[in-house]
Amino acid sequence: DAGVTQSPTHLIKTRGQHVTLRCSPISGHKSVSWYQQVLGQGPQFIFQYYEKEERGRGNFPDRFSARQFPNYSSELNVNALLLGDSALYLCASSLRGAGAYNEQFFGPGTRLTVL
Amino acid sequence: DAKTTQPNSMESNEEEPVHLPCNHSTISGTDYIHWYRQLPSQGPEYVIHGLTSNVNNRMASLAIAEDRKSSTLILHRATLRDAAVYYCILSPSNSGNTPLVFGKGTRLSVIA
Image (spheres, each protein chain N blue to C red):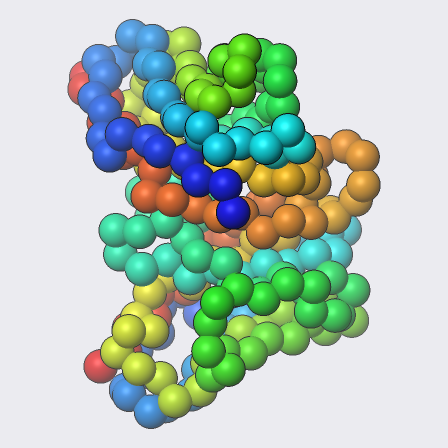
């Protein structure tokens, strides 16, 4: 079975530009979360979506937005890019069911470089 | 969010057991202890989790102190493939509903 997939793998942008990152969850998973990982740090939570609705937001500015589509795939958008947005952006999917443990499955990430 | 404290780095010889410690003195009664690891150039992957009792799975064992203020991830025989950053995370949920709060983790090096 395919795991979580993300595209593109790498991306180079300049300051002030806009970027869209894409994520396809594992088949059957309805919850998608986005994380930002700056070099040398652990991943930091940005957004969680479930059934196309935002269910959680981390401490990130309004330049960051996301959405989830009917097929449960998701997009992360970042406007007015800053140098500090350079990072690995990770997508994670989970079943989001009550009761049994539902681990988060991470994709390989998109490496964004802002020049 | 509850905090965890882990050593920045550890080193192990191949095929030796590895004990990765985690302190979480402010853990609440409903917090689960999760361990994820991140191999080079990959996203994090689930290792193990527990609440109060020690846990074993095919990847590792989790030993939880009686007062729950600390825990230890045990890799029984380290291999080169186990070289990764290991994250100890507290979460008030055992499901995928709650975002994971990662610290800096412990970078494990395995020597052949």
